Image (cartoon, helix red, strand yellow):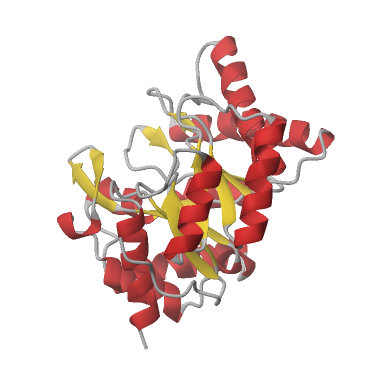
Length: 284
């Protein structure tokens, strides 16, 4: 694969959800090296099944990231449901999030994205208060452990999942060190809308209105092509195999001078991350 364009220095960085496919090896450090070779600027460490990394490995990851200038984030395991019925499942969910934050801190990552909860048929207002309480317990534990990592509940792609934009903004206002992970593909998949320049701009405006300009100066974005149906997200696709309007998406990011990380979750990972970055750079 040819190397990408020169890494963006404007403050908006594009990168991959996990180690790029073209990396020499499967390790996180290998992935960081490849991200830098491609001219991309960030990488999300994907702890999909469990948060597992020793401190010695994390030190190597942190050193590699500093040396290459690649910024890191992390994604907590999918097996988290802060609205679980069983106390042991709630405790396990909180511990998975805590352990991901610990590892992220060792690695020098600033943010942890995670899927917060399922409604399980409960009223959304009730679920919001349950999630808030249980997430607050996590944040208090991190504060006691002197871990300063942003915890970012993700905007989800199905109506059965907790995490619409309003819920995330409310949590971010009420809890210290909590901020949203805005998955624009998931937002589009919820109803097939939110896929035009005006809609992307409206989302960014709403974030700034609720959380302040600083939220656009340190944003955390997930994006990919997306397949969806009547119940929302079905699966991730490559950009050019989907109807996601990525050109107008990056145009809105540029017009609003958004800064932070754009993590590409398309199946082809680095190909679409480069597509997004190159499209961004080509805009006047």
